Length: 132
Ligand SMILES: [Fe+2]
Figure 1: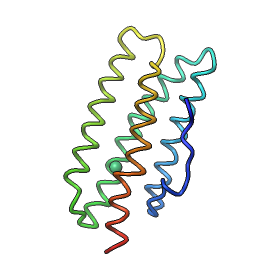
Figure 2: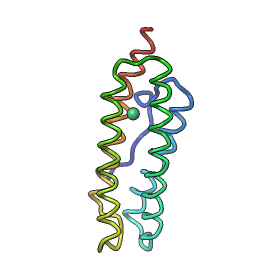
Figure 3: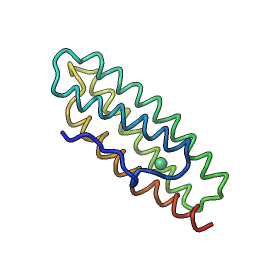
Figure 4: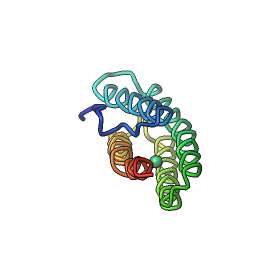
């Protein structure tokens, strides 16, 4: 699986959000690296739980910025965050029940979801701030 390559498409220009996104991308890249190495099951489970907690914290930060800028897309954006949270909970339950390691499909899902979310959905907020 290809790692996420950080580039300008990932930058919102809000340094707090960008550094949180970077941290999330770094964790996902560790999961992808671990796919090729042995003896990583506990590490991957730990990373998924870090991502889960950290993701929630990050969503709260983003929503705080959106509120402070009176962003009209905030309700829709919160819905997207919430449905992602539901999906991660489902994946986490799958991992706990019967899977030795984090399934590759979960890592793929996290990789695709975060890349898309940051470069597309979060950029709509960036565009809004820029035009303000
Ligand atoms: Fe977001």
